Image 1 (cartoon, protein in one colour):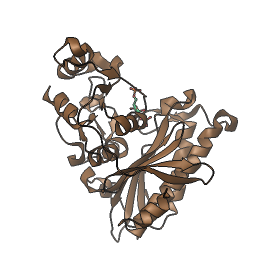
Image 2 (cartoon, protein in one colour):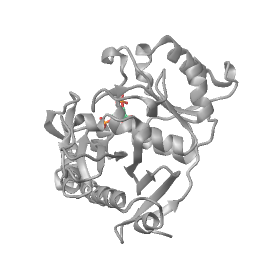
Image 3 (tube, helix red, strand yellow):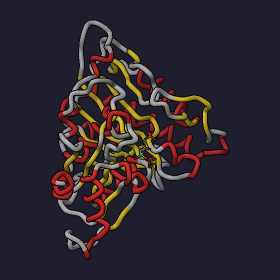
Amino acid sequence: MQTLTQVLKASTTPSALQDVLMTTTNTCIDICNALHKGSLAGILGVAGNENVQGEEQKKLDIISNDMLKTALLACPEVRAVASEEEDDIVPANTAGEYLIAFDPLDGSSNIDINAMVGTIFSIYHDTGSDAATEQSFLKPGTEQVAAGYVLYGPSCMLVLTTGQGVQMFTLDPEKNEFIQTQSKVEVPADTQEFAINMSNQRFWSAAMQTYVNDLVAGATGTREKDFNMRWVAAMVGDVHRILCRGGIFIYPWDSKSPNRAGKLRLMYEANPMAMLIEQSGGKAHTHSQRILDIQPEGIHQRVAVILGAANEVDKCLSY
Ligand code: FBP
């Protein structure tokens, strides 16, 4: 079985991008080892302040953010970083060619209950003689040159695309290296499993309520087949299940969210997951457009997300 380094070396991925990917994934291995210590290292619980999203930050949100920021700013190929936990972009090496946007710890509400969390990243190519600015990052998701996540679960896994399909790697804790465990990931076009936070139902559009009611009605309703439901409360966990066995994941806009934008972040969550899903044969949309076609207006923009099995996404959008 090949290591991540060997897989990248054998690929057409530019060596500078390989360096950015190795810096990111090696730092995720350090985050994984920190997570395993949990309360023994006093890293659980809240940090006592809010991030730019208006959310209470967990200590591990800040620890993982600082670990990634420090490593990436020291990487000569990195031009700038943007993080869900940072108010503004952080310029790095002007001569660098890559911008990286990341969610250092997705699924923060799962940290203190020892449930699945992850790190999500999205990389763009960008050059210029001046330092990068927020404007440099406002590129549609179609321009991503790489995207992935590291899932901190029973085993630590990396799921990665550089635009030639999706591969999965599992961390060998003895060697502290990611080993390729799946070379071609495919999402079945149809499914009988959906993921949505049902407690928000009364705030959804009438169309979304009807769509989900028809799923729940199952074989007794218009869908004529039963559906199962799952909700990990960490997008990285729900998307991983879909890449492993199919399904549909929905975080719709709801009347709770300002200007009906949905909860999830375009740059740090929706775009990288959309690239992984599409590279695995699935689809990823908001209520009205393909996520990867969205022209971002700001680095902390939120969007609605409907992704997974291609035919089921089409079915949902038909409502
Ligand atoms: P962060 O933890 O990075 O803020 O991500 C948001 C998130 O936790 C997603 O991972 C997950 O899909 C969703 O929010 C869960 O939302 P809810 O708390 O409504 O179930």
